[in-house]
Length: 317
Image 1 (spheres, rainbow, N blue to C red):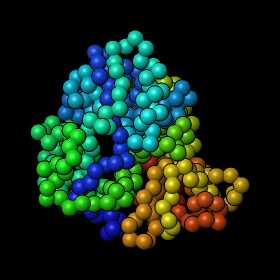
Image 2 (spheres, rainbow, N blue to C red):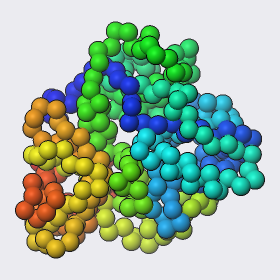
Image 3 (cartoon, rainbow, N blue to C red):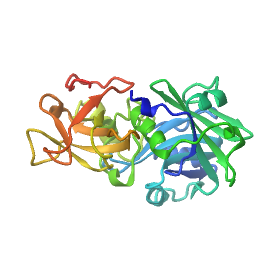
Image 4 (tube, rainbow, N blue to C red):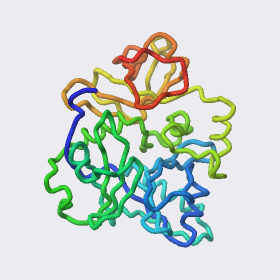
């Protein structure tokens, strides 16, 4: 891993937003909307979850936790929050559930490195803990770098818990997000991917036993009939930052894209960027992949922290 992505410190997660589902039917409503099980989500847990169209394409991806039993919070990319709230609200109908944008009520702060370890020394990945400072959410490590989020009440001041933590840049945080291999749906990638195309079931974002939700039949069919022909991989690029939604081409086929950038971030040392790229598995069997066109900057596959169920892989590095 590049030494430029070993930060320690804290920052305000301005690229995230928060939705709130509150009411007697909030959990039941979300259970019928998200790819993961909300009913069994404990008060001391976080869970990934996706919201799909009827065709099984992801409209948003969330980190989900419960403030109290009838008050569920969902963090996602700020770029998709308004449209997602509007669409999900169409399904509420008579349910006792109110969906609101809670971004102005809760500020999300990211903490990484030794600073995160000091604040969350005994928290397991996926654990949530309520404190006077707010709700702490433990995220997966990336290359041994600890990560966490504090959901704190709106306050103009930096949380006291971060008093001794140096500031880090948003690019440094986003590079860790990319390297984690956990995708985030952004505005440019809405309605592009079935969850398995983004390895969402491999990182715990899909429960195949929970019951119906929009697109569930498509997602289940892709899983059990082996129809997933595309997957997401991590790549390094010796070029300016790739943008979500940017197309990737194979060296042997300049006429049609072989994949698409899901998330990306610069290395911060002037030496290119890293990107999560959804790509045709057949395009990994030979040749090379390039950003923007078949003559564009080359992509070098990097190692993810979890295995992908396919033998068709370009060499790492």
